[in-house]
Amino acid sequence: MANKKIPRATAKRLPIYFRYLNVLKDANKQRVSSTELSEAVQVDSATIRRDFSYFGELGKRGYGYDVESLLKFFKGILHQDSLVSVALVGVGSLGSALLNFNFHQDTNLRISAAFDTKPEYANTVKSGIPIYPSEDMVKQLKEQQIDVVILTVPGIKAQHVADQLVEAGVKGILNFTPVRLSVPKNVQVQNIDLTNELQTLIYFIKNYTEDSIE
Ligand SMILES: NC(=O)c1ccc[n+]([C@@H]2O[C@H](COP(=O)([O-])OP(=O)(O)OC[C@H]3O[C@@H](n4cnc5c(N)ncnc54)[C@H](O)[C@@H]3O)[C@@H](O)[C@H]2O)c1
Image 1 (cartoon, helix red, strand yellow):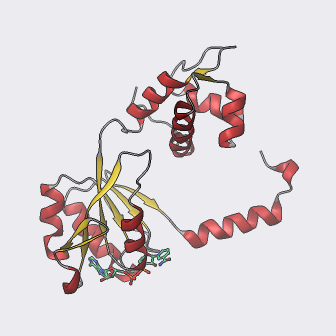
Image 2 (cartoon, rainbow, N blue to C red):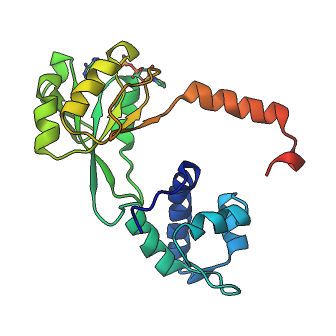
């Protein structure tokens, strides 16, 4: 069931559900109704039911959802039951901020290695994370069996680095550069474009009244 294809929009909402379920667990709540969940995560209850339906019967009509079992289920689906090591390439302004952030709370994600071309960064430690010279990148990624990389190099270097990441067997790239990367089909790229996000937000503010938002 974990390998079943689900829509991308549903997949993007799973971490939101997971985060809120953790909040409920910390508050010792044993069950949650779909209305309560809907209000907390700001996703309408029909969408939640449809999202959950991709995974079979997760709740009972009139009972709602059992927090503990739903949390256990999402942990498996989101691979949160084991530590996931992530690497970061490009320790500049944005890269340094992300190293410092390092996904501390409530996740199993850790940046465990960083790479940069600047000789002065080579073999130093920043925010507790070792920085390796980029000549060692392919070897280190293979040795440390890192599948996921955060890419924060200048746009002009992005495709070249992406090619090296593919060579190293990386399966997913969180791409902060403005470049649309060309990678084989078995490699997933998630583009984070802050300008785009901001423009979308402004578009929604200008074009949707409160009544028309789903
Ligand atoms: N700074 C922001 O707020 C921001 C926001 C959104 C997106 N971005 C994008 O993120 C990327 C990084 O931005 P920045 O402001 O941190 O840039 P930056 O110039 O401060 O940092 C880039 C770092 O990448 C390193 N680098 C260059 N080539 C490399 C290579 N081949 N391998 C490994 N490291 C290499 C550089 O030495 C440098 O330390 C850019 O593509 C930028 O467009 C930045």
